[in-house]
Amino acid sequence: MAEIWRPSEHEPLAAAEWDEARAEEAIRTIVAEAEAAFDGKRWPWHPRDEEEYGFSDVYLGGAGMIWALHELGSTGWEDASVSFIDHYRAAPREEHAVETSYSFGELGIALVAFRLTGDAGVADRVHELAVAEPASETNEVMGGTPGKLLAAEAMLAWTGEPRWDEAWHASAERVLAARDADGLWTQSLSGQTARYLGPAHGYAGIVRALANRGAAPPPADLSPYVLREDGLANWLPVEGIGLEQIRVQWCHGAPGMVATLGDLLDLELAVAGGELTWRAGPLARGPGLCHGTAGNAYAFLVLHRRTGDEVWLDRARVFGMHAIGQVERERADVGRGRYGLFTGDVGVALFLRHLLDGDHRFPTMGPFQT
Image 1: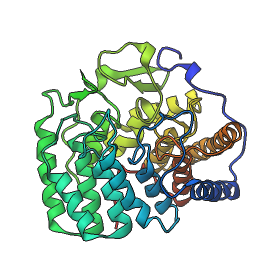
Image 2: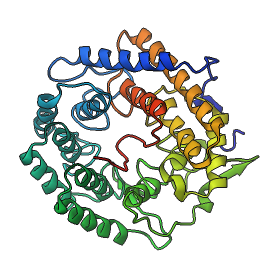
Image 3: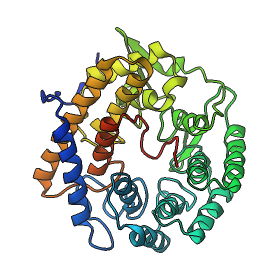
Image 4: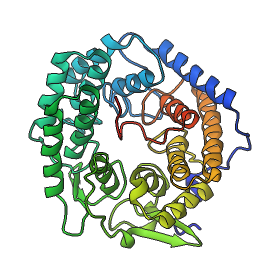
C-alpha cells in the first residue's frame, strides 16, 4: 500500500468506542479553553504553528477562531472580530499579503466581522474587496478569485442583497475564463507555477465554490492523477510530482477530494477514496482540519450522506474519538490548546458538532445558509 499512501504519515487508530457524551464534553472544553486563552488582543501561538504568522486571518488567526467559536455558540466576539481588521491592516501576512484573500487577507477577516456585527460599513468593505481586481491571481480559494466566490455566496445568504449575486457572477466569469483547456486551473503560488488538484489550492476547491450555486463546469478528466490499488484510490497533490510527496489529507489527497467534490465525484471512485482514508488511519500530524484527523473524517460524512451506509458514520465517529484523544494529548504536552481554525482545536470541535448534528459541510467552504 505504500505506493499510494505513506504509513509514516499516520498513526494507529485508538480503540475508543463512540461516546456522544464525551464528544459534547470535548466541544465544551475546547470552547471554554479558547475563551479563557484570549488576552483581549489575540490567542497565543502553538509551537507547531508558524510564529507571528496569520495573527488575524481566517486560516490560522483570530478571524478563524471567531468564526468557529460563533458557530459553536460562544458569544461576545463582536468587538474582537472588528479589531482583527485593524490588526491585519497594520501587519498583513507577508507571504500572502493580498487583502482580497479569503483565507489569509482582509476579505475573510471582514467577512467574519460582518457575520457577527451586521455592520453596514463592514459589509461595504467586504464588497469593495470582493469586486476589486486581484493584486495577484493564484486561481485557488485561499488566496485568489475563487475565494471571492465563497465570500460573495456567504454575504448573499446572510443579506439577500442583489449586489452579492452580481459580485458572485463577476468572479465566476473570471474564474471560468482562467480555466485551462483540459479543465484544470494553473496556480501561481509563492513564485512557483503549478496545477494543484485538492481543495486548498486547486481544482477541487474551485469546483466546490462554483458548484455551491449550481455553476460547476463539466468535470475535468482527473484519471492521470488518480492512483488505484486493491479497491483504494488516492490523488496526486499537484501535477508532475513524485510518489514520495503523496498525501492523505484534506488539503491534498483522497479525503479532501471526496469531501469537497461530493456528488460531483463518481461514486465508485469516491468510495475507493474513502476506503483509502480509512485504511491509512488517523494523521500523525495532529487532529485538525487542514492536515489532521478531523479534516479527513469529513470524507466519511460525505460518503454517509451519499450512500446511506452506516459504516461511514461509524468511521467518522471513530476518527472523531481519536481526534479528541489527540487534542487531549497535545494539550498535555504543551500545557494549553492550539488556536486556529484550520490547524487548531476549534476545528476539531466544529467537526464534532457537525458529526453530532448530521452536517457534512466543511467549514468555510459552504454551501452557506442564512
